Length: 355
Image 1 (cartoon, helix red, strand yellow):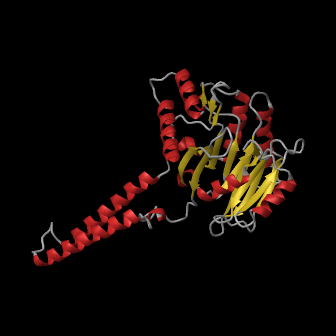
Image 2: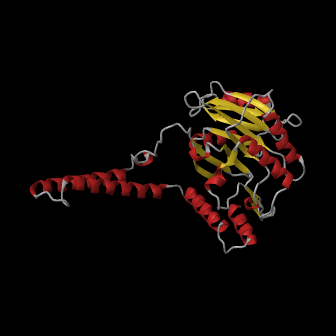
């Protein structure tokens, strides 16, 4: 998050909008820089839509800090229990999920991997998670800024991270029976969540991740790394996670976008096409019914024409900024996974596109 304010502007209204528009049930924030009094005020401000839990850095309340935000419109927040494992760095939340099930989430903001702090963080976290005093059991989800990668593929330029830090994280993963959900979904794709500007050196990494209990990975989908629209140098990692005993629910039938329902041109076109269908049906009553000439096929052609016309209109109405963002995302993906480009070209091109 890189702090609550940017150029004097509060980021929380934008965060509230992000959660609402993208229908995020749970959002973990790092570097939230949130004193207790501010958290109380924010919970009062957004009492109808959000529940904000947090842990501050006791050494510097306005630095570091970690928060877990719950969308009240999607999540049952009545009996959420939180446990601070490492102040300002590791926060655990347990909530009711489906039926009688509970979901335990561990949000982390690990120290930089440059020295021994990162390694010591994972060792300390493992000791606390397995300590009888906390009685937490194994988290279902561990997510946040890990400040270390397990594979050189997750850095550009590629390089292996400090081995003791990686080993400590992997040991914790093994203890918790967890796997990297995004990497399971995209084993050969290069994508990054942290970007330096070209002036800073253009380095990139996938240090922001979501780990799941391995039994949950088959029931996670729609993995994505995308811009949040908030002023930060990290991207947003998202996934949709379902309980394994829930029945499959598809995307549902297609419906006409709300913003086109009152479009005068669209309505006029539909009305004209409907009159044409009426004429076809009237003429069909006078002719012999065949496998290629009957009311059912005429009605199907009518529906297909309308759906195609509405979908084409919806694409044209997508804001230009959104189209540009999608095009840039596609270009970055294409560049990062081009086998003919060397690492320096990838670093420079994607830095320019990202800026």
